[in-house]
Image 1 (cartoon, one colour):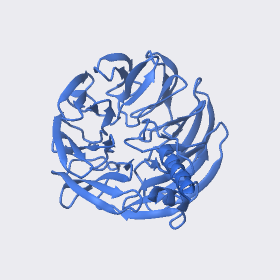
Image 2 (cartoon, helix red, strand yellow):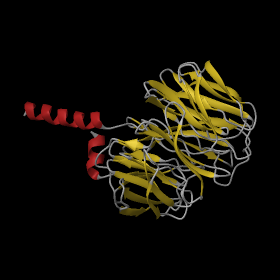
Image 3 (cartoon, one colour):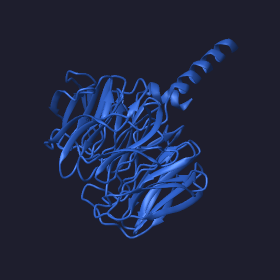
Image 4 (spheres, helix red, strand yellow):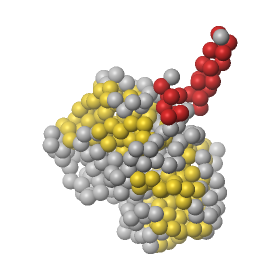
Length: 410
């Protein structure tokens, strides 16, 4: 009996070992990819919904997951409070909430919110960003909800509001401050909030793109679009490595890296698809395409030999990574704000109407399923511990099988 118990415990531990956290914007690799298995590809309001938790206020930030905790941000406009929520991943029960700040409601684009920046966690602390008047505010909490530090790296000015998810790298928190004023990228010490380095962004134009940090061409690179350019930096020092002018003025979508190429979709006032080599040379460029063929808000995703993108208008495309050749172009939902995620060979595209289209990740278009929640969705999904976490305008949904629920509860 004891041998059987030990083997069972070992099997459970092995399952949990392979489970991934979703610690920040677009997951553990910052590109929307998940190594999870057994995530459902079909669900409805009642089928495969392990729990549904109401989230007061408004917010377009994505949920993040660390161990048995889910973190989210929101804004209750009546009280002007920006709030951090901590939920139990297994049940959706609220563990605690904290008012990060109370401030006047900033001016917004109609598709933005006052809690659009996705938090980030290192498994011990959670980092959040909000706008307080004209001040960019960053706060660090521990998992018990205690405030560790709070800092403001400077002012922030934009007619469209605020969204700058923190990105964790080694012992720093890296923040994008592209704005219609003196702009910068800054790295703060994770433990204290003290500034470690700051890099000027010369073009003084608002954008909302968290950087992607990858090992490319034998070195760590921090890359992002915004401020009328696309640029790569050394994430340890902030030193600029290369820059490509444009290809347009404003950006929202973050980049992905695949087959040795950085891939971007943009933007405003013109739409572009572009692949850039790690030395800053352009590999290929679809110049000034239609708003159906490229995205402004949803970030792209990479899989195998392909890049995939869904436009704000709801048209999905598959492009050959090395050449940019378009392999298919098909309509999904009426409008998309969320960025896609991938699990195995499936891509998950969630529309503003709350419909998630599961599409086979390949050179031939194939819809595996269409799944409705009957609630509008503007946040990107998270994937963790065999479950898909989707934030609607009123509720957070945990999509998973009973098998995943049993494993997570042990």
